[in-house]
Amino acid sequence: MKAWATVRRHWAILILLALAVVLRVLIMAAYQPAFWFYGDSGAFIESSIRSGLDPYDVGGLGYSVVLKVLKVTGSFAVVVALQHLLGLLTALAIYTFLYRRGVRIWLACLATAPLLFDSLQVTLEHYVLGETMFVALSVTAILLLLWPKKPGLVACALSGFVIMLAWFTRPSTIPMVIIMLGFLAIRRVGWRPLLAFAIAFAIPYVAVQSWIGDRPSAFGTSYANRALYARVSSFVDCDRLTLTEAERRLCPLEPLGQRHDRTDYYGWNGPAVQVPKNDNEILRTFARKAIAAQPADYAQVVLRDLAPHFIPGRHIGPESDCLREKWSLPATIKGTPVPLACTPALTQNTWDNEFADDKDAPAATGLSTFLAGYGKVMRTVPIVTSLALLLALVAAIRFRRGSRDAADTITLALITVSLVIPPVLVAMYEARYGLPALVFASMSAGLSWRHLSKAGSSHPAGDQPQVPATEPAGIA
Image (cartoon, one colour):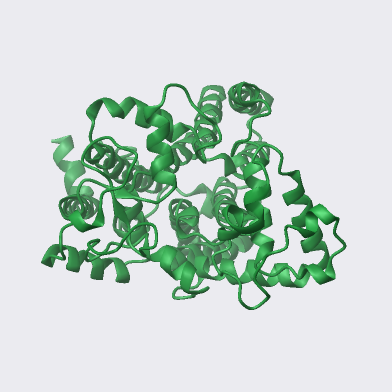
């Protein structure tokens, strides 16, 4: 009886989940066995095949460890099936959290819908890439803190360890860790829970860094130095800089106005190729001199690359547009040779670190053509991110000082910003780097709207009943 009552109460989200399952099944049927991104997917798979782990070859090691475990299946279809399932479970967790916090069911469904149906979300779930895993880990870490009325020692310790796993999967997570520490301090959880969070993160963090040592990796400065050099290469005018002879050899070969709009090109091509990966401090020095001499030009390219994260339809250039198309569902992959193709590649049917020959890919079908059209329409990340930050700003003005809702909403909004802005400051615009912000933006928007809709009621927004007394605390 209780189970049936739960189904009746939550029929809307169950329908959305069913439709989301159908969408993912169609994607798995149309694009077999999985999508491949040139460079990153191969590095992850190669890492899963080799014994041991090399910290340099991949952007993060957590996903490589998971692939090592899943290699026993010999199937990339199993990998992406699990990622699709993980995406669905993450969306369900967000819905349950919002419902527990007193958000109306229709609004909780609306906030969850982008996680179920956004085309970038479902496309990345189908790639042999670590984004889906990173999102699930980071959401788990933050929910451990937001779920209880006041997180205790165990919840904080678990959260610290899980966010460390997220960092192990994507090393650019440090700003999020700092925000979570600030959240615990503002919520006045006590020094023991705060210390438990810090220790649970710090001990494995130090262990990993000690294991890596001086080897170049994404966990140190070697990746960041190369990315920052590439960031400035699109605008730097070496005639305006005071450079050493060695630094001057790093000046881009193309004249201003004729440079690549996809700036990561300069990290792995041109003068930077001559800089050894284990001794590239000169790249950071060059980049800092360029930013100091041309701050307005640096600000201009940063704002240009931030715009697509917040404004739908904004374009940077043809190379960036080509990269963006790799995160879209294609009508066909046939006849689009990797790596020049502006479409995803497919993995082999066996566990191999080489992509499948595009000549063997199936021709366009009615299903793949439909999915390609769906993908062009259902891009929600810029709209949701912008709306969520706007709602959070308005709600922050009207929150009762010190309320739980205020701390939670502002924390989620700050995490959203921390996932979008730093990659653009240091590297470039890349749609997949901004995707994890979608889940936190959706959570923030749900809490903000709940507060604003209750602002005129007799209860202060932060004191609204979290769940009606006659209802279960979440989905049974």
